[in-house]
Length: 401
Image (tube, rainbow, N blue to C red; front, top):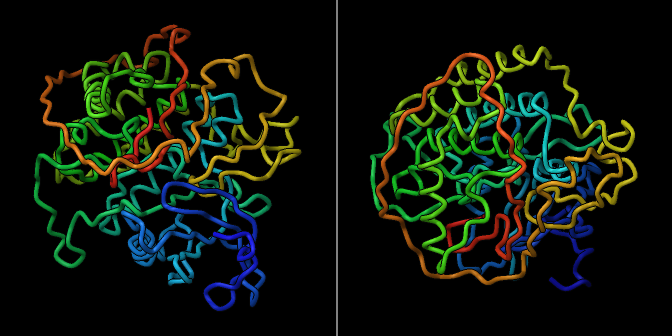
């Protein structure tokens, strides 16, 4: 998009401002509603792109128009050679906040955000949709200085899909040999195996995100293979052979119980979301803390918060990579697992699609109450790869390693 067009009006009365992010789909700008003076986010997508998503995303926002923790969509249409979508302007993503906090979050903060994230996914499911691309980049906090400043929002519904008929509630049929869809680091084991996704897969991906925040990285990050297909197979296999007990060492037992429950769900089974939230409540009790709505990022910059004295070009909607400088007040853990942020323009999409036909043996895990035994995670490697975080690698597969 030419620089001279940045000040154009779109959608009749929305003025385009500065660029705040970009991804494989296009570019996102700040904007303002000239009638109400409300700040918005304006997403531009080439009309002739290989896998257009904004129209589908707009439809999902319309379905979710009354859902808590989902931004409002105000306009979808065409402007020149672009599709545009206008939605609420929000704050940074959880991936950004995780990065600024030294790439590890406290147990208390993870419990607090886990409760919100479970509830966001629940409301998506209650509206007959599955999300299919759970990752930290797609969970944002509210705009700073507002009552929603630390409320978590779920954005980017380009991969969402109806899993049941809205009227009859008839569930989609189980299928196999499905093309991969989602982000390799967080996707469920069943997704790696080419099985049709359902509600259980969104919830399992959430569990992987929780452990990513707690540990600083996941055991299947940084795996090497001659081809991308083999790399995805290795990631899936590593998830299979990494027991839940091993994955959750050193953290409240409820995180292991969460993963054990969601991995045990049947394809069309109704998840007990209240049970999953109650696990987080029990985890909070187990560390002798309470949900006081105080998060790690609020303690940055001498307690002034993440947005104090920072370059505010935050990755506001999970698509770009303009990150503020790291805060000075960080613990020694900030030196671990930093990794490099990949450039969104570093590779081109591969038009070939593959699916995995691997079949692995899966075993159960048994736990005792209390804390999962502590294990030294100092040997965990940091992410440092030339592949993109959240970029569309195949036309419908977003992968990060």
